[in-house]
Amino acid sequence: MLPLLVLLLFSMIHFGKMFNYWNTATHVTAEGARYAAVNSKPFPGDAATLQAQLLAQAPTTELRSGGSDAVLTPAQVCIDFPNGTATRG
Image (cartoon, rainbow, N blue to C red):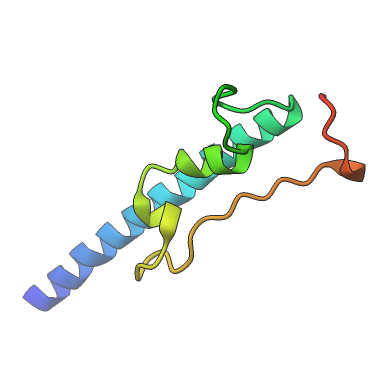
């Protein structure tokens, strides 16, 4: 009975971690879309690009750098502007 309970416990922990990462990715995506739409950055005085600033907002190093059994590759931030322009709005 104990192995089954341990398996269930670790499955719940892994699911909770996965759900948290999904929620974080959704939040950073929405924030990135907003900043890209107004052609701005979260920290305008910082010389880093919008992509770098959004990636730095990931709450764990596991999301930023990857390399674990849960997150194999680091998160990527890609922003494409239509027709190659980056005008506001």
